[in-house]
Image 1 (tube, helix red, strand yellow):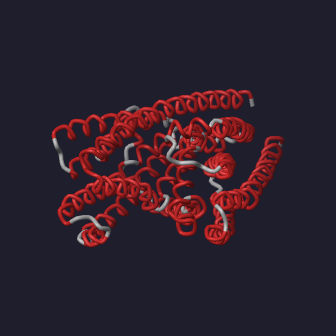
Image 2: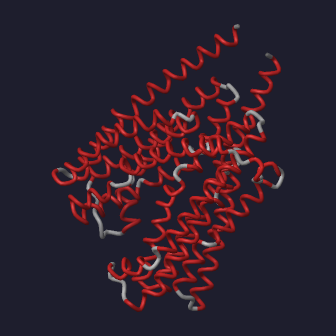
Image 3: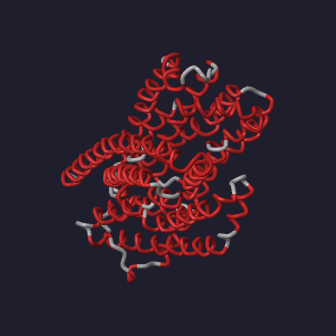
Length: 453
């Protein structure tokens, strides 16, 4: 018992150190990335012109949707690697990496064939969007660059997942910051030398492939057993990853319905002006969301690691602290932004746009509630409770969607937000927290009974 207590204490201390390092590096990395992005936008706008810059922005936003293309395999690998590593099962880690890479490479190959087969169809789509004939050639070149990046990064970016699973998220955080700074420098040089649209597209995304390769190199430098080995490929492990990935993919789709279509629905009902007000208010309070996105994701592999080691007390305490900290710190940030909106919004946007106080108040509430939802979602991911997420997420999405559709045309934007927040709170968040603590108490009771025998 004493030896086990020493092991648990050592693992807990190491876990907290890694959480702290990942959080600090996240703030540094996000800060550098924000500055680099801020610097690149005017350079790209000036060099590309309004027409092609609009296309670049569209292609860049579509990259976020490419997360669906791996069918959740990457998230499945993260959980499997964390559990095997916690048990010191190096063969299991290598089998997961090899099998996951094989599956992702096959998916990437299928997407490459599809891109090559239907590439010329993009010309008609681009022309239909109103782009001039003179811009068609460079536009297709840009589509090819972004397509190649999305396909190659699918297997290559698994290094980021591995680093996260090993609770070394500070490595991809810092590398990503360096890569974005490098991209900004390349864009600056190219804009001064009159580079074309295709070259500028390459400068903004292709250095990220170098960053993924560097992450792989640094993570595997002291751990050769992380490198894929064909003899460790397991069809059984591949099947497990695909089933787990399907669960994560469903969660992503449900989240898209619940969280990511609001601007489109509001534009459909309240028009472009209503959608613009919603988007600006959402962006204003996104400061709190960014902080949450830095601090909360590192808890995912920490929960998985602790549970694999049987540290139920650490898991329960960490969950309680994360929920309380999210409520207090998130509430403080959101509250400050709401109180200071009278001088922060004009400082940010000037006097050209006036945001309704009811809209800002409802957006503040929704931001805080969604932050708490992110905190509990990280716990569910780490515990591998995918079925619970799917059931509660689907219940929320399909309850809120009809209400959203009706309010987008018959209500105001603030009423839309309040109804969405209440649906999420009542249908998913509160029941989810209650079920979570009930299951944790059951785990704790079973562990106590087992230890007493």
